Image 1 (cartoon, rainbow, N blue to C red):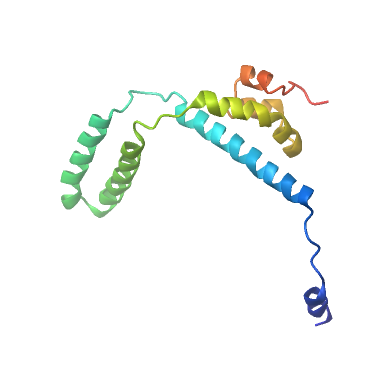
Image 2: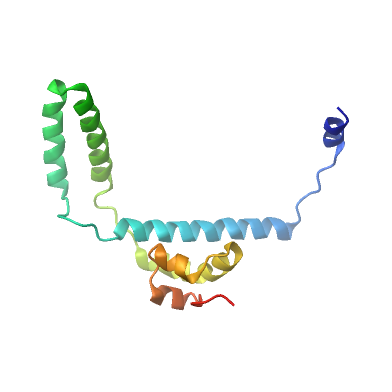
Amino acid sequence: MAASTATKTRKKTPMSAEHKAALAKGREEGRIVRLYLEALESTKPRRGRKRTPDSIRKRLATINTLLPDAEPLNRLHLVEEKKRLEAELAHTGDVVDLAALEKSFTKVARQYGERKGISYSAWRTVGVSAAVLAQAKIPRTRS
């Protein structure tokens, strides 16, 4: 019981303005890095034939005709495919301004990477190009 009363009576020390600013800066840098990496992932070339909105709609129509008579396990797979296709259709036509995201990324990536201990090879593994890393002044090796 003594420990619980000690924690209740302990005064919270207010955060300094510098600490709050540092936290806000870290959150903003993390947001910029996340948006850039998500954009890289979404614009990465995929194998196989590209789907068009028309081909997606055609497959959705086929699924809708198959669903009523489908076996339970097959119905499960069809419902999941339908959900994925509807999400894909909702995002067709979304344009990602990769150049603007890249510009923001190059401004914060070095500080973010140093603070989080992210190596050059880790950036490369997740798809960041060597040219972008050079613009961000991220060295190939850590000192």
